[in-house]
Image 1: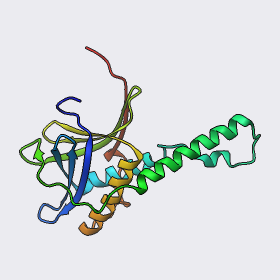
Image 2: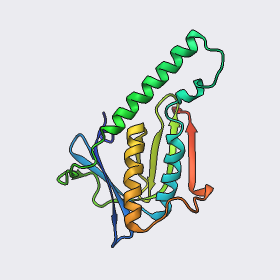
Image 3: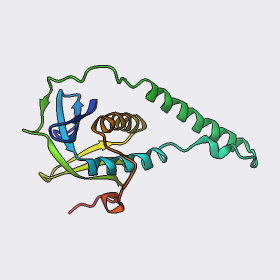
Image 4: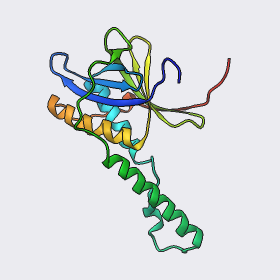
Length: 186
């Protein structure tokens, strides 16, 4: 891993009434953290993107439930997909929402960054990432997994409820972007 990349150890998302924003803290395995302010507009965009993404992460075994030609290969494929779904659900069920966030991490920036845009990016064969582009020109990128999507959306529901924000109304298409790019060398 490089200086800018590290495994996520903890995530915390809470409403700050004084700032009227959400504060996302990503605690990394190297005992540092990245903090990002998220406005109501960006949270709506983020919610919409994560909801759309969560429906495409793991193919559903339901597609094999229709009475089609039941070949041995189709049955094997359905069982394999079902096994992946069960495994993913077990990971989600084991997420820890009760432990306190470790507060003595060293921040990677002087102050929390302010997210201005949220996108999902995919480069070549790498897993998709949630990217929060910030006012200082930096981006915070989180590799998307079922567990991360579930954890963040669960925390968003709680934090926005505390803030009195709605997540479902008024998601404007210009606020939402999904990029698929290929990496090129210059």
